[in-house]
Image (cartoon, rainbow, N blue to C red; front, side):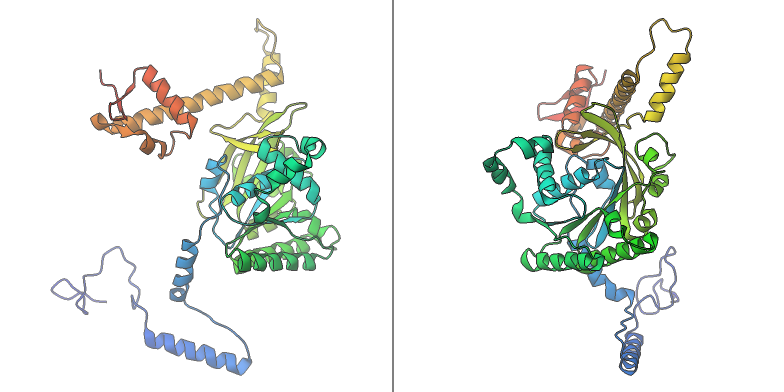
Length: 436
């Protein structure tokens, strides 16, 4: 396209911007498209094939349709992971964890959030029985041990609570043959679309059960993973594939071995190469075990984030009663860090007090990091309020901004800043900085 003397182009349009790549045509050619379509049709008739070879302009409608469909909901207790691990329909994610590391409970909590958002769930229970999973569901809802639900709850109470989500949750029948099992998942998704007309989330717990009798475990896992990926893509659904760690990866998943960045943790899964290929987001859950502790800390290592590119580490908490996962806005100390600090205190010959235990060191380090996170939130909040000048900012607007915390954290930070004399509330409810 060449510009003419009056500043426009040869077709009477605006001049071409300097920052645009000068493609030859800059607009689709209808004659060329028709010739391509005729050639494809002629080839298909001769060879009895069904090739399409569509062009990017033909994909725009599918893109707009995909954008119009909702993304997968995440639990409200996982706001950071929800922001980073954005998942569109037609994609699979993966939870990777150690043996007994809370993978199933994490998936149960996710599924309860999906059901609460009015979307159906399909659970492929290849390891645990349906009765055990039902006890875990109710325990997660009520913050109680699944054992108490199984042993102590009366049947009437169980039925009353199950009625809240039974319409949105179905278990896929178990089959010994892998291909038959995968076909059952496909059939269940098709039924969901016919009945609910909504995208479902299907959970496979866990992927390792598919390869117990395979001659070549790696090839079979790759084949199975690609089949699940294809099912999610073709049926416009979401998939969550649970995977266990390897024997060597067990130390990484319990925090005994540290990693420089989250992406390095993807090799902890026994099905690592498959998770990389077929999943949009890979979440590797570290859980720092302690004897007789009811609440544990850990980290979610987001080793792959296809859409946001925000791989990284997220602090987590795990409550054994109910198997409830939560997030922290700081990274809890790892067992390796605690051990290093414990050894340093034991070697300190100038101490006047006895060396602290590992539990005391861990609690002290966590408290310090939590206080630092609170200070950073208050500094961020004060900077935002200062930028608004004399007019200040409304609290609901402040709560929507990143870096100021969520829920009760915002209220506590505002109270602390107000008590310190840094900000004040105006008669119309805005917050503004105090100028001295």
